[in-house]
Length: 523
View 1 (cartoon, helix red, strand yellow):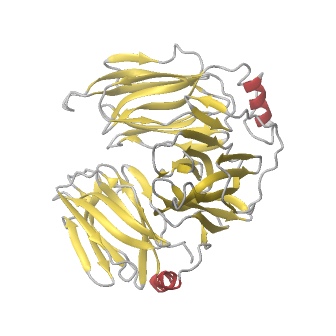
View 2 (tube, one colour):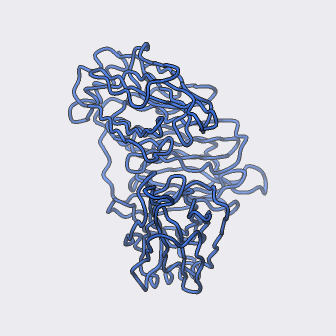
View 3 (cartoon, one colour):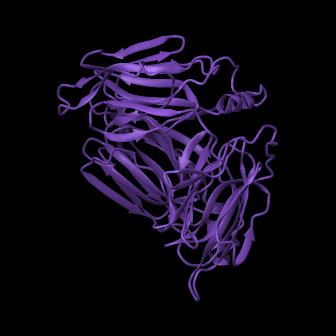
């Protein structure tokens, strides 16, 4: 089935941050939070090849009314959306004020208030299979993906009636190659899970106790880290973390064993081994029972299976016929490395890391971007205080965007571009203070960024308590802090200087960047 759909919209404003759920088989359920002001939040339950997948909540769930629209999918499906968008106050931000949903059986709504400029989907004979838009503390705008419902529903009904085998073909957004699904191998117990399809696998976390208790996978989605859910139970006695040198090391296939751990007990995955274009990791678990293997056929881009107290069965989504990178540079791995009673596989030794901060208040939610190779770009918004921050990191030559921390209200926006790796971020400084009228919360009022070449800022008003990380020698490789409606607090992950770190050219395999990096790490 063709997973690509036509896109329409979004209708409304473009404040906040952009979101895109992608394209699915159809929509099972819509949850809308609204008030007399407009639409505060929307969330979707999609269908993907018979599996339910919930989207993130788009907006803030702060409306006075909540509506749950459950559809009898696949016989009932969305065919149109319409509504109104406009400003709440004169000259204010544009948001979605009202929504009206139409299916092939009935209509739902309107939700919100029908004021402002009307919009509607200008197509017929098609079904809605995904949504995209912008959101902040409201649903700022909304758009849709559509495709012909005849083929979609017919295919879905055939799958249900014929029980089509588990191997099927789909496509990764942005990649023209086919994706094949294999498995799952193991028992029939537990509940179905499916992480979906990504562009690669970065990490796998396992817990074991006689069999595979749980698995959680960190994927790559076009350069961005995306964690899948934890599948399985708790209480595993052994913990394993497998870290791949993605994108230079790719997971190509898995092998393992399944069977019962006790007489007449449920069938579970007893052992698993991960194979890449460079090496194998495992076996993890007891290699006894019935063996399985996906064969070396491509690059693994997703996992699926069944889980309960254990992982009962497991399968993979594989990118078909992808050429893998040759092992043209030294293998930097020492395995295993013990770290807080956890066995970490495939992790190269790194220069010392340490943490500074966070400086600021105690409000908002705690966040931590983690550690990367360096910082390439910072997007900052401010009004009376720092409203939001978003960072583009470098991870072994690949750009990775962080989540948006805070909410970019009507404010000044700054784009700070760092000429990484020739220029590195070495420190931050700034001020935090109470913002009058904001429940006496201490928040970041100003911030300045210090690099090996220049100083950027200050951005905001330098009032209140001063803070600085510039007395620490090294480079910033990650940020952490707290945020809500503003940037409440900010801290940094620092890496000690490694000698002649800036003497080499850009990090790339073609210019020997990997060898240079390894030489610096190990000398």
